[in-house]
Every structure is written in C-alpha cells, then in structure tokens.
Image 1 (tube, rainbow, N blue to C red):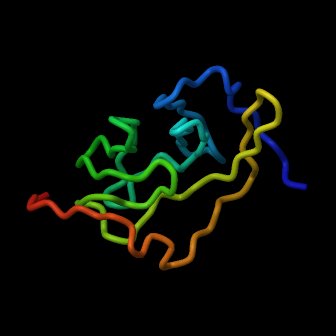
Image 2: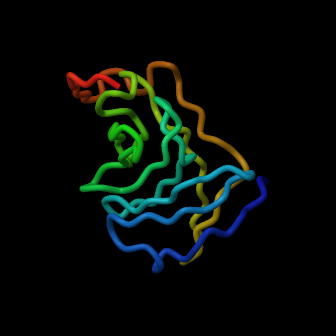
Length: 123
C-alpha cells in the first residue's frame, strides 16, 4: 500500500477553491471543482508557470493557458494541444485528503479530442 501524506480536510476547500502544497519537494495544487477534488503538479507544461483556479479553470499565471480541472488537459494556447498537467493520486478518507506517493500517468492520447482553443498570441 502506498504511503499517504495529509494535505487538508475536505471542509477546508469550498467549490472552485485551491490549496497549494508540496509534493516530493515540488509545488502542487489541490482544487475542488464540481464537488470533486483533484491535485496536480503546479507547473504549466508550456513554460513552467504556477497555476490558479479562475472561473472554473486552472489558469497559468505566466501566459494564461487554461487547463480542465477535472482532467488536467490543456484547453488553450500557448499550451500545446494534447498536453496535460501531471496529476497526483489522492486518497480521501472521511474528511481527510491525502496524496499518495504516485503520479497518475495518462496515455499519450488521453487529451485527444478534448476541446481546445487556439489564440493568435505571440509569446
């Protein structure tokens, strides 16, 4: 059984909120979206920017790329179409949210067909 590391209680996060934490020394983000908790490495695959919840999406603070908080799939440029955030496996037992010492690996085409918006932006 994988070791569990406590993040916070479910009651600590309201809908649409985030909580930052450390995962193996890296910055990570826990979000609550549509009543579901998800955690990701806090690192945009485009240029490494930090993320925040904004209007129901995970948004890169550096170049404003958007990501689906349910899947981690990129939804807009400048992130690359088909790219995604690295998801951290969670364990929710009662009111306690913990992360497990593992990443959720997605297949290469896991975000294929996901809605994606291109913007005419020079970065």
